[in-house]
Each structure stands twice: as C-alpha cells, then as structure tokens.
Image (tube, rainbow, N blue to C red; front, side, top):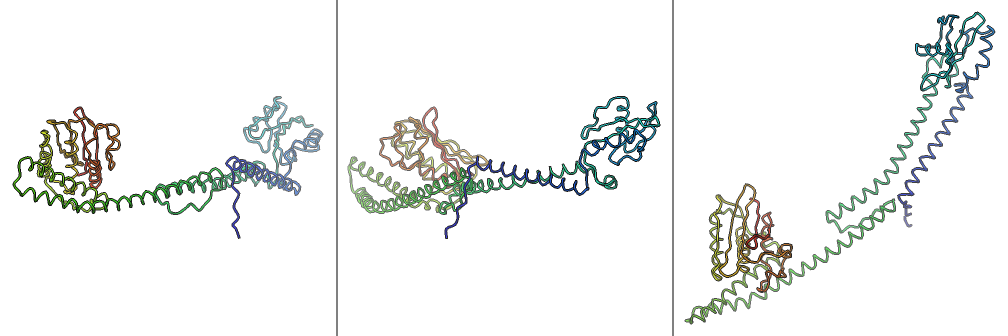
Length: 457
C-alpha cells in the first residue's frame, strides 16, 4: 500500500490558513463565551449590565413619594444623602472619590465620571427635604448581595477570561504553524550540514511540508547527488593518475639506470676535455631525471612524503647545508648567492623533505635569474614561525603564476616558461609546507620573485 503523500502548502497559503484557523477558533470562543453569559443571566447568577439603569424607572418614583428609603435601595446602587445645605448626612458603597463625584452631581454636573467604568448619577429629592444622589454604572452585578460582596467584579473577570482564552488560542496556533516552519528549516539546516560535512552517500529521505522549502530541499538533494558524482569522478581520476604515475616511474627506472651506468663507465676512461664535459652533462641530466622520478613517485603515493621521520636539527647546520646546495646550483650561471645569518637554536622538521623543498626553491630561482645575477636565501625564526625565503633577480611571477604556482604541472606562465621543466618544484614545496602545518607564499619584489616557506615552530 502506497504511503499517502501529505499536502504541501505554499508560504502564502500557510499564512492565510493560520489567520483563518486562528480567527475561526477565536470567533467560536467568543460565541461560547457569550452563550455562557446568557445562560448565567437566565439562571439568575448575574444580571445584565443595564439592570441598574433600567431600574431607575422604579426606584426614582418610589424615593420621591417616600415609599422607598435609601437604605432599601438594591445593592447594585451606591447612594449618598445630603441636606438642603449640601452637607453629607449618610452614604452607602461610596469611597472618597465616589463621594466627590456625588457632590459634583449635586452641584449640577451630571456628566459620567471615572475611567474604566463610567459612573452615572441621578439626583432625587425625597419628601423630607433631603437630596439622594444615586450612583450606578453599566456592569453586570451578581444575582445576590452576598455574591456581589464576596466575589470579584464579574464583568471584568469575564472579559479577562475571554482575552486569556484568545491569548492561549493564538499561542497554540502560532506554536503549531511555527512548528511546521521549524521542522522544514531543520531539514534544510540538516541538509546543508550534511553537504558541509561531505556525507554525500546518503540521500535526503524527508520532504518539507512547505512547498518553497521542499523545492529548496530538492535542489539541495540534486546538489548533493552532483557533488557525490563529482567527488567519485575526481577520486577515480586521482586513482588513475596515481596508477599512471606509478607505472611511469617504474618504467623510467630501467632506461635511466642504463644511461647512468654507461655514463659512469665512460667517466672512468681517459677522455678529452670536450668528452669529459659531455659525460658530466649526461651524469647531471641523469641526476635531474632521478629527482623528477622521485617527485613523480611522491605524487603517485601521497602518503610517502608524510613517512619522512621528524628530527631535531641545528638551524646553523641546516642553513649551512642549504647555502652549499645553493652555491652548487648557482655556479653554472655565475650567479651570486647571498645568505643571511642563521637563527640560534634547533627546530623539529622532516629533514629530507624540507631539504628537497628548499632545493626546489633555489633551483627555481636559478632557472629564472639571468647570468651573473643575484639570489638571496634568508631564514628567520620567531616564537611561532620559521620563514625560509628565496628571492631572485629575475622577471618575477605573473598574476597567473601567483594564483596557480602551487598546482602540479603548471608551466603556462609566459614570464617563466621555455625551460622544459615539469612544473613540479613549487607544487612539491607547497606539499612539504602543508606537511609541516605551514604554507608556501609567492610574491614579487622590486628585484624579482620571492618564494617563502612559512612553517610553525
């Protein structure tokens, strides 16, 4: 049996539904409240709010002809008796404020007084020559004097009760409809968190009740599927590239060994100066090919770099070795290498990887520095970072190289191309920096280009 799909509402329809539902329930509550009041009046528990006003037609003639004394007035009237000089003789149910209203009425001001309930007055002259000021309001009195004296004022309590029911209804309806929005918002939040955490293998099973939210959720589901497919494709490409690089490095080892072995045999013979120079060139090229193969092997097996052991080295020895390495690279082009003072103390580094990364930076600088140019190597240590900088006097990095220089096989920089290199030097240096928890920074100076390895101490 197929599961029934719940109806999805648009945001506008949901708000109209909220307003209509809440309004209908409030109207029903008002009708029930009014019906309860009517039933209480029929039972005699309370009287209508106009009871005192309509009763004047009876009590006023009775007071005027002396058949009814003020003390015999119904309990829902307040009264005060004044002599012909306006002096108060006696009163009932009046406090000081209400007595003030009665005096004003006796003086001729019969306008309603008060704020919440307006106090109305009627001045009646009784046969004995005194004036009786009747005071009343439009409120619902209880059916007996005992209830009127002991219970709180009925009409105000009834209105407060109706407002309380309305408030509770509004709160419950708001909570219900807000719950629908909160549930849908939670689905969107969960979907966004799932994508952020890259848990893309499980589809979003829930559907939103609000149509606009559901459309957003379905768009996020499509995004999740696309990202999952893209990552799977990227992973497959990475795996394929690793296999191809592994196969390439394996295939290159045999011919390279043959070339190196024969060159070494030739170097042992008696050779002319020109022949010796050619053999030395073959040996240097073979060493460079071995270096490229080592880099390709590390790209094929990303975990190989992290397997280099960490060791504590003296900074002076480290800088001295880099300086010797740099001078060897600079000698062929007559380039001058300037090296600053080494910082004091030691550092914990992956020595083999860091040496190769610095060699790459120096080799990169030598490649683009003109003959008889200058290169500077600087090592600065602070409390938190170790900065290894190599600055050349070449053409500098282009904007594209600054943005993509760390990418593998990047050789499209017009200012630094044409040398036939593979574009792995900066890529490998950046990987070594990340392995140490740092980063590679590329920039231009007034002299040329500058590359820095910034490593945490």
